[in-house]
Amino acid sequence: MDSAMDSVLTAELVVDGLVPKVPRVSPDGRWVAYVTAPVGHAGERPTGDLWVVPGAGGEARKLASGNDLGSPRWAPDSRSVYYLVGAQVHRAGVLGGAPEVLTSWSGGVDECLPLDAGRVVVIAPDGPTEEDRRREAERDDAGVRGERARLSRLRTLDPRTGEIRTPDVLGGRHVVEVAARSDGLLAVVTWPVPDLDPGVLHPELHVVDLAGGTVRDLGSAAVEARRPVWWRGDDGWHVSYLGVVPPGLVGGCAVFDVTEDGVHRDLTTGMTSCPADLATGPLALFADGLDTVLRQLDPATLEFVEVSRIEGQAESLSVSRNGDVVAAVVSTAYEPKNIHIGQPGGLAQVTDTRPELRGVRWGVQERLAHQADDGLALDGLLVLPPGRTREDGPFPLVTLVHGGPYDRHADRLMLDWYPSAQWLAAAGLAVFLPNARGGKGHGHDFAACVAGAVGLDEWTDVLAGLDLLVAQGVADPERLGIGGWSHGGFVAAWAVGQTDRFQAAVMGAGVSDWGMLAATGESGPFEAALGGSAGWEGIGPHPHDRLSPISFAANVRTPVLMLHGADDTNVPLSQSEAFHRALRRFGAMHEFVVYPREGHSIRERNHQLDVLRRTRDWFCRWL
Image (cartoon, rainbow, N blue to C red; front, side):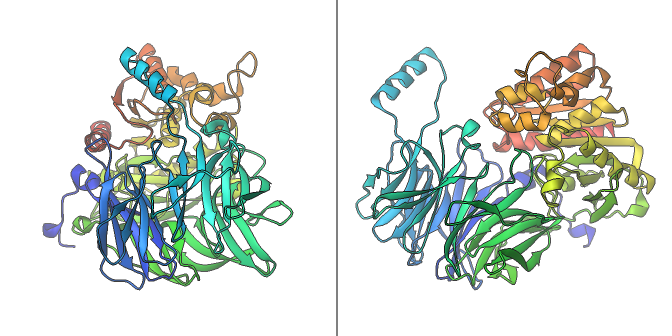
């Protein structure tokens, strides 16, 4: 591309773009509905738009707009779309007409699923009682904040009258997800309580017949059970779902099938890729190294057979009733997320949600393959500054570690509100994106080996790739940085306590103390499994102490930028506060920034702009 025609990559260009999500193929395959929303939003709640595009490809048409718009679901006749706006059910006709508001449920609605012209299944929490309202008013008067999780139940909505009924099924269990069979039977995932901990640890699966008012329990499901789907084999109907491979809490995701006698069997045992999404068929998207593979289950062998390979990252899989039309959100190395539609054997892009990026000259993104110190095969990515090649090195280089740790760097466009490769490359920095053990894309064993061992072999995996880039003359050993968000923030904090070779670090919403996180984070049991212990397991020192960056704060000589959301419940603010106090105690150069109203992900536009500018300025200052 002629440099005179290149667009300047600004922070506004990153956060003001639209992102497509939750594509839903109509039952007849003629349409795909999807939602777009800006990366960052200016108000309390983001505004989204609902679109439909022909399944055969064509021009997209907007059906509706609203705050917190999401969860589109098709009517069985494919003539209208049900969706949520502000946690209430709306409906829009695909051929036109004004959208309708169908509910005004006091507790809000979590999900809706049309069954027929007169019944829509909704998952909705119990509304506040008069006593709840009285207590909330007293708390408001006293300036006290307090909220308890509400039990969500399976309910039915009559779209003609707006009446919501609550059938007497599933007792007091918290309803999480539901999938409908063609004859109206429901597969329902429940938790014993509405709280993530311990709810997600003890899911159960049920088959509900609303017409007959009966429930058949399919027993305990795998931890983190989600995405239930129905499919028909030669022996009848089956229910499958995604969940964590037992028995540990740390490990890869698997597809489970439930037999008639209630046995939950893993259909992906021994595979070296990881199921990431599941749809009717059953069809599944698998994270496979740096790419994504679409596979279909062979009902005769109960093995997943590759249907097509998608370069980069694909997510949010949806399929028509007879399986001949498939949709997903796809991003490749130089293309942002867009809706792709087609037959299972091949998908094609049908939307262009970020035309403003077309004039940007991206840094070359290169796939890496190398070995860990113990010979384990690893992969990753290298992004160079725009217009530069390896021969122009060595470069100042930043290592960006992904979150999770059960996540990955796929070969997609690396442009996000948090420290991202193309954003840093535009400032002249090379970026290394390692996929260390503990992540997805290489099977269960690869993911599970970090249980009770975070920061050990996964850290040497990162170093192995970095050392190779230094040896190849790509990275300047005197100008190295490291950063990341969430688990990536943990690795950055861990790194600066283990070595002085980095000249700058960014710790975004990172973990400094695994024992404290097990006690205060919303996913405490998982954090204890990663760190190896919890603080209440007798008198220390505990296993997690040797894996916590706070234990090595006295060693830190690298300037550290810490960023955190004030209302983060995943990795609470106390994690950065503790590290901040430790670094101040030992006189380490650092800055500590707290974003008000933000959770684990930064959502407000001005805050995202600050994250982008502040992180890039930090690395440029020190490198």
